[in-house]
Amino acid sequence: MINRSADFSETRLSERFVAFVQLFFAVALAASLLQFDDILFPPDPGNISFWALLTVYLTAITSWTGWHKSTLNYPYTESRVAILRAFLDATVVGTYIALLFIGSRATHSLGGYLFGFTLIFVLYLVLGLIRRSEHGPEASEPRLIIHHGVAMFAVFVAYVVWSRGFSPVPDPAAWIFVFLPLVIIVRYRWLREWRRLPWVPHQATPFSKPSKRVAIDVDGVLVEQVTPVLHKLNREMGLELNKCDITDWEYTFEETNIKAEIERAEREREFVQHMPAVEGALEALSLLSQKYHITIATSREEVTDPWTREWLGRNGVRYDRLVNTRKDGKLLPDADILIDDYVPNINTFLRNAPQGKEAVLFAQPWNHDTTSIADLLQSGRVRIAHSWNAILAMLGCVKGNPL
Image: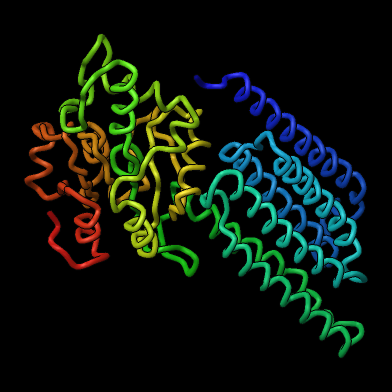
């Protein structure tokens, strides 16, 4: 059974961590406005400290909004790692507070100002790695952080070298050094999240994979769900059912059906952790992840998401993000290709998607009836694959006959 009390406890703990960091941040920003009102009000565009403060404020606010989004998608777990994560989040806030004081004296402490932004990227990297350990690889993009952190460190080193050769640093150079952190931060935020906003047309970047995004279903495509459930039921109920007998997703037996029994079994963490991978799936994901952006899409109950991530991590699955489609169905507006074993999911995806998007139906005994997608099969928007080797051939990762 689902441990509802543990899940509730973890949610409450995450909410407390979030409330703590939010309160700390709000008080710090409010106090700083009072502290630096002589620099900020009225605005003095000719004052280098005015622009340094604005840069810190912009960076802090964008960091706050990004942090709030990340805590919604990747909440704190009930673990020591989560406590460290909350402490480091508070440390980021403390670093911004220090940066505000340093920025208010940018004319005399430009080196400390630049070092502070370098430290921010170091903290971003550590926090990102912690989130990945809690929630999987989709929780952070360390390569993106490292590239921009190195750029920020290079700016700091350049200033140190320049300041030793020119003391004080000439005013034009000082202005450039004040604005370079803003340029780096804006570029980082653009690549991390702003370019994904709905009104921004998709563009490939040096840090993004090719534009094609493949969504892959879990049960029946990546993980064998029917076979272990049948083993369990045959043992408990004295049945003699095989996978080939399940010709309908709601195949009925003993006043129950296979769909209900799978959902019941997947409420047990141990069962989920020991479900076998579909033959060839793990090797195929390793190849596909080198060419495509991989989304793992599951319609399991949301409480099982941490267990799904554990399974993916334990089996070395390379992917970019995990999404739960139980509430909204497999609309997946960001995906270009869906690989699924359930015909209604294929229907939902393509009937609500523009031309050009495709799907692969992973052949299973319960999806032989394709009447509802006959037109999509005829048009070529849906192809049927009987193995992962066939999928690799369809998507151009290996040579082979896509049957």
